[in-house]
Image (tube, rainbow over all chains, first blue to last red; front, side, top):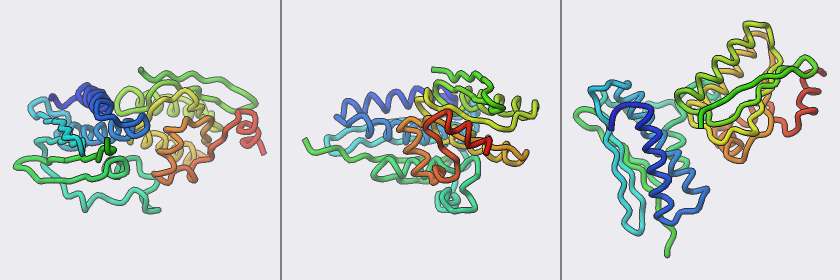
Length: 130
Length: 115
């Protein structure tokens, strides 16, 4: 996908549809689509800096037990452990820095993998037992 | 759904009625420009009515925080009114619910500015 806001919006819609197909309730679907939106914002804005020459890759996988979303960019990469805690008192009034926290809040697992170049984020939501 | 903002004055308080999504891009910009415009006119008692705000992402939260600090830095006050469940829950988990003064009725909110 292109590194644009339109891609972010499309990814959010796709995530909502995938979450609905996976049988998730409305609140949980909202959380999943928000997490995907935040992952895409990270890739488009922070990773690729809206560079039209850089692409974002987005994949959805549903295996009956989990919904797995993978987002990767072609940016410089980053260390998730170096992202300041947005809940720390000194960071509470910062204007940015909540994306990763929100991904972790709404998904069961969030994994980061350094690429050459870029970053891959994997978001996993466990599905209710049928 | 794009973000819309309209303003009205009640007892010296500027109420900004927002509707739509406060998200990265247009939504965030509309909020930012609205606050900037109000402060430029020395309108520093600002009540953001979020009753019709259906969605907010991390950028939107950032703009709310920015609005809060901008108004405060100019000696003003910004309060929030009528949070939807989604926005309420987001402010709770990001620990911002206690930072903002959140109201659930307009008359009470206006009175709170004028103590």
